[in-house]
Amino acid sequence: MGTERPAESIVPAEPPSRRQGRSARAFLPPWLFQLVVTAGFLGLLAWRVDLEAVLTPIRRANLGWALLGVVVFPLIRPIDALRWRLYLTRVGRVPYMSLLGAFLVGNLANSVLPLRMGDLVKIQIVASRHGLSRAGLVTSRLVESVMDGVTFVLMVALGLGLLGVVVGPAPLLWGLVGASLLGLAGALLAGHVLSREPRASRLIRLLPRRWRGPMDDAWTRVRDGLETMRRARLFGATLALNVASWLVQASALFLFGLAFGLDLPVVAYVGVTIAANIVTDVPITFQNFGTYEVVMVEFLALQGVDRADAFAYALITHVLTNLWVLVLGLVAMWSMRLRLGELLTLREHRDAVGQTR
Image (cartoon, rainbow, N blue to C red):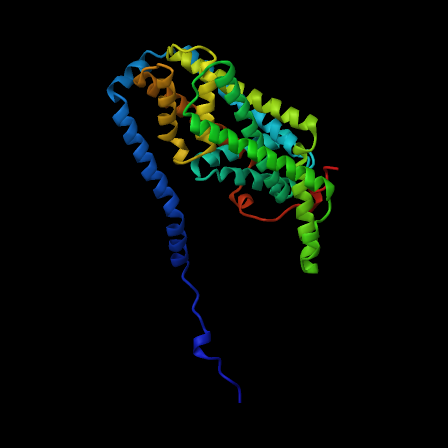
């Protein structure tokens, strides 16, 4: 006589609508947090700035200088894509235009997703299309953050030490400088240690045999991503491109300053660029709305700029630069024929891996 399966072992499948509802609830808090924080910053602006007076500097802005600033700003992205290609020297070979497209799409995603998730998007595009190791790509992104920190330190030294520009609160600046230098020391140490053990560490040998191969491969790819930290010439080249990118951004912000008639010396825009990058690198609100305006208004007020003029400058530069991010990102998605499935798959094209040696 056959046995019947116990009724309690039959578990009905969860309805898709319930799963989607739970996912939505899990994703809602970050957006709700951003909404609350954005409202708080906008409220602070309304309290600190005479909003009725903001329309006056916008009406009298010089359209020619503003258009020139709009033209100069996107020149940052080709430099950033070239710099990314150098970070990937040992991780893999990727056509420059493909890297530029992935970078632009990642920037677009960063503008609409919280916590710089656009960085994961651009990594996913390169991994799925060109078969590069995700471990190597993620490590190279961490190295990029370290080099951004080094550039930040140089710019703070230039603005504060040599040019005498008041960049911001000293405790905040020195805290960021300390964190940047600590990250640099850690990356240099990691690159040095891994160069001595290119294949596997003793810890990997202690793992079960079936895990050793994948972990050994991941370890090697991480080492490849740290190549910039081991080669002085590569380190210098990426740092030079970083500085060039910041200077192009400073030039665009200077042109916008001319458009609004801000009575600031050219060197002050080094500080403006530092303030803009602090906001970009530490995203708190959706598209940095509210945070960018508050930081920029307070920085420009330290330089003696009227708050209404400062807010008009911050608002227009933010809107125009974000429009560029949107337009370039959409054009890149269209030209690459990018499909949503590519951002979700974990498949790697193994035939493309290994073109680095």
